[in-house]
Amino acid sequence: MHEFSICQALITQVEQIAISHGALKVQSVKLRIGSLSGVELPLLEHAYPFASAGTLVEGSTLEIERAPLKVNCEACGLESEVKANLLTCRMCGSCLIRVVSGEELTLMSVELITT
Amino acid sequence: MCNTCGCNITPGNREFAYKPVNGMTPVSVLKNLLAKNNDQAEHNRRHFDRHRLLTVNLMSSPGAGKTALLEASIDALRDKYRIGVIEGDLETENDAVRIRARGAPAYQITTGSACHLDAHMVHDALHEFPLEELDILFIENVGNLVCPASFDLGQHRNVTLLSVTEGDDKPAKYPVMFRAADAVILTKSDLLPVLDDFDPARAELSLRNLGSRAPVIRLSARKNLNLGDWLDWLIGELVQKRGKLAADVLAQPVADPQSILSNTGMGG
Ligand SMILES: Nc1nc2c(ncn2[C@@H]2O[C@H](COP(=O)(O)OP(=O)(O)OP(=O)(O)O)[C@@H](O)[C@H]2O)c(=O)[nH]1
Ligand SMILES: [Zn+2]
Ligand SMILES: [Zn+2]
Ligand SMILES: [Zn+2]
Ligand SMILES: [Zn+2]
Image (cartoon, rainbow over all chains, first blue to last red; front, top):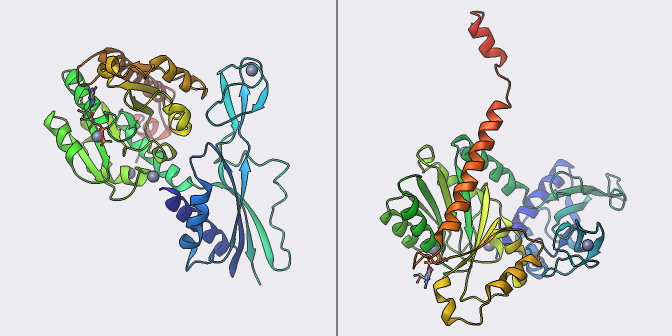
């Protein structure tokens, strides 16, 4: 279960951001995650309170935005939304595709309490 | 679009920038959560490149035949190439012992409960290892089709093994892992005659449905069947890697200022 170690890396990054902004506490943390990121959201959410305990991040809310899974087709040039185990082009069925969204595992923003 | 350099900032999310509201400051960060691992992986890759190594990360479910493939590959290439192996396992030194019995240096990382290797663990192993004596370094990852795919170790190539006893729909079930593969090996093919429900063509279709163009190589390490395609792929990658490294060297300035100074006797 690597969600816990990813969560720890997240907390470390958020805490550094909080410290560099002289914050007293962290209010909320916003992530953007795609279904091809290799991270399971429920596990990440479950790990969050444990990984943040005793840090400036403790007690903050975790908001996760799902990135849609989209591919760009090299054969017909169109972009389509697809499923994780069927990444072929929705329009022409080609497997010559590039994933343009859905692999994200990104810390988008942090809300800090500074007073 | 990559996740690390900030090029995923779009008009839609640019709004979160440094504006204090009632003592609350939204800070836009857009950082990859794995940034630290990725930095370490880049550092590892520089170690490998400096030693002109090809580094290959082997991934599969437990028992798909990674160590057996390594044993067969070491035997086949012994006279021409020097191979080293970093082994990742939850417990035991068994795999490292098997590799050493073939005469190749092996370093065991025992991960305890961690289900994957990360770049930091591999770096610790590197400094215990005779990199300068090797041509190819294999990293046998922990047997697991899920998280090893998420951690860059600094390798040059990923190889994912799928044994014919696991079912030909595995790529559809583990898309992240199979999309990461530069080559997919169907192992234990000697068992195909008795496993008539495993259809190699269906396994390949399941992989192509992920948009993967990786070659699919069918072999048996135990019976020494069809190892040739695998060895050709491997040596091809090594040759290509060395060619690239040579090109990188050529692409550098012929003489840096320091050496011009010393050549002309002007250096200190
Ligand atoms: N029939 C057959 N059996 C094989 C082949 N390759 C491996 N095996 C058997 O499969 C079992 C597991 O092989 P290993 O090479 O240890 O697999 P592994 O992927 O290294 O296993 P872990 O490191 O535990 O994940 C052993 O009993 C091997 O003898 C093969 O090509 N054919
Ligand atoms: Zn198309
Ligand atoms: Zn093994
Ligand atoms: Zn893991
Ligand atoms: Zn180092």
